[in-house]
Length: 552
Ligand SMILES: Nc1nc2c(c(=O)[nH]1)N[C@H]1C(S)=C(S)[C@@H](COP(=O)(O)O)O[C@H]1N2
Ligand SMILES: [Mo]
Image 1 (cartoon, rainbow, N blue to C red):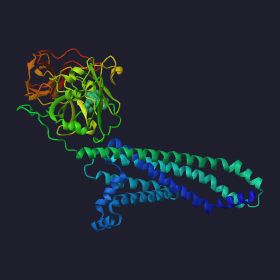
Image 2 (image 1 turned 120 degrees about the horizontal axis):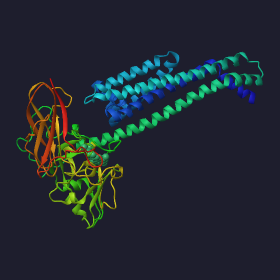
Image 3 (image 1 turned 90 degrees about the vertical axis):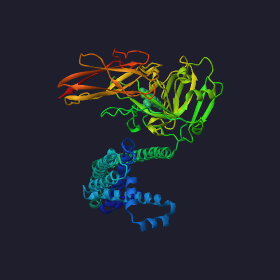
Image 4 (image 1 turned 135 degrees about the horizontal axis):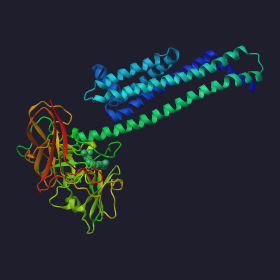
C-alpha cells in the first residue's frame, strides 16, 4: 500500500505533470502580482489622488468609449447592475490577464513584466486623461506597476528555483525505476529534497505574504476611499440655508497688488494644521454635538438643529500658534455659523466653570476660556460654511469652532463632536501636556507678502505690501522701515472688522543693492507689536519681520 501510493505520487512528479503544476503556480504568481499592483495603487491613491484608482479609471474609460448600442445592451441585460457587471467583468479580465503575465514570465521572461508594465501604462493613461485629474494622479498606478513588477520577478524566480530543484528528482525517478525504495529515499533526501523544499517554502512564504497584504491593504484603502467619496458626495450635494446676515466688505478692503495675499483666502489655499492622519469623514445626518459637563442639562444637537438656529456670516482671520514671524499659517475666511453663546445657553452653564473642552471625533481636544465663548462682544461660532460652501472635509466638515482672537489649537476644533463645560483645573487639552499653554490669545502681527524674500526685484518704484492682524482689537497702523531709515506709515486697506486682517502697502523707490525691509503693527489699543523674538512654543512667536530684498 505504502509502496503504491509513493509510486503514484512519484509518477505524478514526472516532467509533463510537473510542468503543468508549475504553470498553475506561475499563473497564481501573476494574479498575486496583479492584486499587489491594484492594492498599491489604491493605497497611494488615498495619499496622492483620490481619483487614481486603476480599476475605476479603466472602468470609466470603458464606459466612455463603449458604443451606445453596447451600453444599451448592457443596461438591458444587467439593468441597474450594469456598472457592477462592468466591474466584475474588469476584475475577471485582470485575473486572466495577470495569470497570463505570470505564465509568460515563467516561460518567456521578461514578457510577464512587460505585460504588467503595459497594463500599468494603459491604466495610467486612463487615469491621467480623466476629467478633473490632479497633477500627482499618475503616481498611484506607476507605484503600483513598480510593486507588481518587482513581485512578479521575485515570485517567478523563486518558482524557478523550486522547479529546478524539483524537476531533476522526477528525472532521477524515471531513470531509477528499478531502485529500491530505501535507495530512492536516500537520494531524494540527501541531494534533492532540501533545495526543493526550500525553493517551495520560499515561494509560498512570499506568495502568502504578498497576497495577504494585497487583500488587507487593497480592501482597507478602497473602503476608506469609498467612505471619503461618499461623504464628499454628501458634502457636494449639501445646500446650506441662506444666512440671515452677510458680511459687508467695505470699499477699499481689497488692495489689488500683485503678490499680496487676497483679502479672503480661497479654501484650496487655506493653511491646514491638524493631527489627523486621515481626514475624518462624518455624515452630517448622523453627526451629533453633545454639550455636557457643568451644565444644567445635557443637550444633544443634530446638524439640522444647528441650521435651524439660523446662520449668520462672519469674517474671521484664523491663526496657528505654529506660525513663525513672516509665516503663512494664517488665513482669512467668511464663515457661516451660529454663535457659541447661544448653543451654550441651551445647556445652561453652571457657575464655577471657566473652560470649555471641545472634542473632535478623532480625539483631538482644545481648551477655550468660557469667557471667550459667552462674551456678547466676541463672535465665537460653530461654523458649518467656509467662503460660500460647506466646510471642506479637511477644514472640519460638518461642524467646527472658530473663535476670534485665540490661536487655532485652543479654539478652532474641527470635526467637532462635544463641548464639555469644565474648569482649567480639572481638564487638559491635547497640546497642554505637549509644551503649549492652556490659554493662548493671538499675538498680533504683521507680514510682508511682496517683494518676496530672496526674489530679486528690479530697481524703480515698487509697492511693498502685506497683511496685519490683531483679532478682536483691530490694526491701527502698520509701519515700514527700509534699512536703518525712519519708520514710515503704510497705507491700510479698509478693515472689514476688527477680527480680520487688513492689507497694507507702501510705495518704495527701490535702489540697486540689498536692502532690509522691516514691518511692525500698532493695534487699536495703541500697543506696539512685540519686537522681541520668541519661538512658537509655548504660546506663539513674536518679533518684527525683517527681510532681505535684492534689487537689481
Ligand atoms: N480636530 C482637530 N481640530 C483642530 C486641530 C487638530 O489637530 N485636530 N488643529 C487646530 C489647529 S492647531 C489649528 S491652527 C486650526 C487650523 O485649522 P485649519 O486646518 O482649518 O486651517 O485647527 C485646529 N483644530
Ligand atoms: Mo495651530
